[in-house]
Image (cartoon, rainbow, N blue to C red; front, top):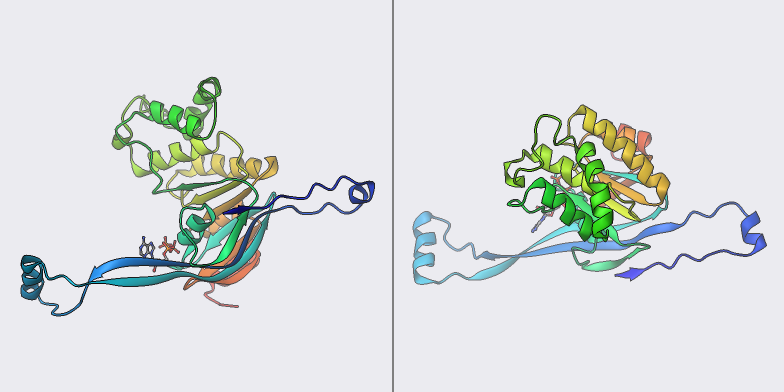
Length: 271
Ligand SMILES: Nc1ncnc2c1ncn2[C@@H]1O[C@H](COP(=O)(O)OP(=O)(O)OP(=O)(O)O)[C@@H](O)[C@H]1O
């Protein structure tokens, strides 16, 4: 993945001019295609499937899913961008491609900083305690051990994990999916990110946590970066994002001010 090197305007003329918006992510005609091996269809009954397994005569073919189809947009520093669309429309695939975790079949993605993807599926270590995961997460984000120690209590408080007992000293596998999502978000939100990509991580939190995370996202945007938020909750998108991208069948069907885009989406009206 290439990087954008934002031009530093230093001249007097540049200072006098209207402030330029710095691009942080440029997505240019991007396509994402999954290729998954699958057994050939010949004979769909249980007997022939068993026969193929026993004889080892499985004929592999490749299934292709064209998840993202020619998407282009530019995100700027300070943008908070919602990503909406029906199930399977390609939102998570697009975010994973922006994060550099999925290759693009065609097109290019340029980012001005290292993107951080925070998703419901991103892994914390299930057998380690919440406490250990907080420290490891901080170190993984580039903090020094001393910085991790000083960030620790703030992260635990923000996550609300210990509100009803000492859960932070229990292994992560004992957490509900909502608790794990809250801890993941609290760890990621402990430092500013040039580009933060959040995939449904807020949806599982309770009211109080959602309020805290929305406020934190606004701070993160103001502090420096660009935040992308995938959510099926229109209200979360409305209160968190100023701009929204609407995807359907892998294509970007609308990109504009959140109210405009979400209103149309809720009425099911493609532009
Ligand atoms: N690992 C994978 N292998 C093959 N196909 C995949 C894979 N992940 C996603 N897909 C397919 O890519 C398409 C887009 O999926 P994606 O998860 O990006 O959509 P989404 O808009 O995030 O969906 P949702 O709102 O349900 O989370 C779907 O058809 C899905 O089946």
